[in-house]
Length: 154
Image 1 (cartoon, rainbow, N blue to C red):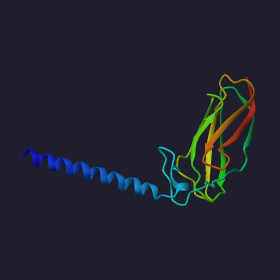
Image 2: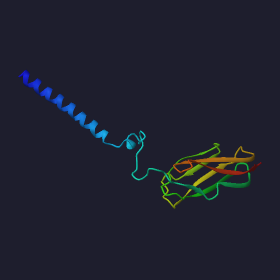
Image 3: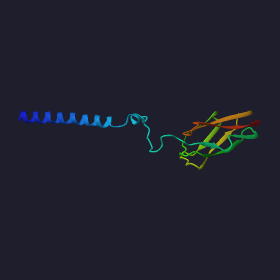
């Protein structure tokens, strides 16, 4: 009885060793230029070897003129994806806590338009103002700067 158990155990070890060799052979058959291209934790989309999204802003600066302290200024920066790949905005960040940006998290198809809405709260911000909003995306130019300017008076 022991001999039969040892025989099957040995048979399983031999079989498992052979299956590992087949996996190594399959890995060797993948062309070298394709091995190791995919970064860890990212998905490769077929046909997307190069990103060709372009974030073209209609006007990257807005001058709100003079406002009284405490007023809120709102502006929408409009842009178009003039590239050939979907545009994905991953982050929009203002240079100051008094400025709040909002943006769509959905991909923007080639030829489609999108916007970044910015709200500036002038409370405690007396004087000339220049707020910068950085839009980070998968576009050819990764970061796009939007400028909000004006003056807050008492």
